[in-house]
Length: 581
Figure 1 (cartoon, rainbow, N blue to C red):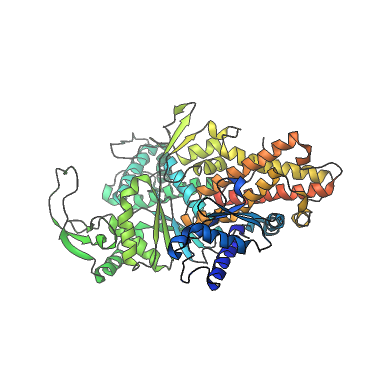
Figure 2: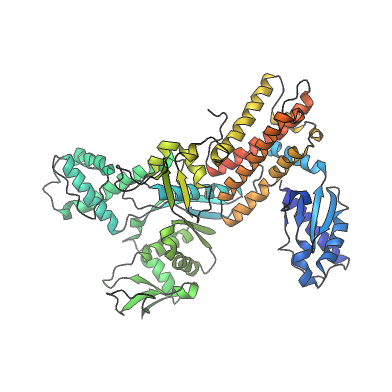
């Protein structure tokens, strides 16, 4: 049930009848007609912009359209009043039965309340984290992991067939550096002093990898040259790091469907096939790029290169795909990787990158547009930096990692639930402060606590009701006399519950899971406000002594709050709290 969608359908149907009656011209586009909560709740339950967006194409005054529309809507049993406001907005008030229907829908549909068919089963690939397999995940990866995972869950909730994917960057020079770093830890395990030269990875996380090498090979590698052990150690170290990354992701509650190896693209003809696809479309050529804008690099010189004509698909400049020595640029395997995704039949692609990849967006979108002939959209979401604080001071160092704070540092200190929720309290492209003290605070200023506390309070009420002999099953509460709910504070909570399907739909269209976290905080605030008013007004208390019928009507409301909070937290990957300690 999506009440806002239902009322919008009612508005559009009324507009269509106005066309039949000659009150509106034919051929109008109703796509921009919306029904949403009014900015001021005192103005009504819902508001529509229909008259405002149709006035110009119809050649009518907005108020004239609004008044005619109000007259038609007033005949529907769900509408108790339709009032024209300002230049032509239309404010609607709904019958009490409509709001009671919202609670019955929540209780009947349970965790599925708010689910939709927006995605229509289309296959979408969400690639996120995709950190180089050279060490543990850091706090920046944590934000990308949480955002990507919540986005995948959100898209699943609104009807997409979602694949969660991790791209293992195991084909570049950084893996050679990893192998050399591990070799030094192997030497250390053999009783020698490691030589951690500049450019190698210094973190202690490689110590157990070196020890594992010692256990496997003994000291047989000590007398061999790099050419004899480099390839073997690349694979050994990469596998060890990916095991570490998988373990860290699991601690955060993230599990991927696919781990795709960049290395699998090399020597298999897959990069060549992707480039040939672009060449067949006339998008690969030999040419000389214009000099870079701004300050000229000292080593820049005009030279002929093999280029991808990415400007034909919206990029600012064409991009090199081959180095002067005949090797591929880093962009070429990424083109091949996305060509593979398209070949697997996905209807849409989403990449979650860190903020430092901002310059990569246009070229990657151009590549996907060219490879798919514009048929497969690519949305790239950038996650901004996370600033860590503890005891009022910046928190920067992890001895185990060498020079950064790891995902496990964060999860071990505050838990996965707190980490995940807080990472979604800002839009992905906005900077985020993560204060270890504040995220554990038990106050209204801490969103994760405030939402969890609301759910725990509902669980407490339901336990007390059961102890008092009141039936609290959803089927029973569905049949409660909901007409007993009528106080404005109760209606405010019901209206907020009614917004959930619309909110999820909006968040799913925009690929913005942070909207779910914002909504949950607002719902929790309305619930806590109702709870607190019950301290002063006994009639608002959820359990009414010697009045089980009224108690059940109020329990239907609070149980509905818990259902929606639980569903929202499920999208965010957070476990609802049944009690707070």
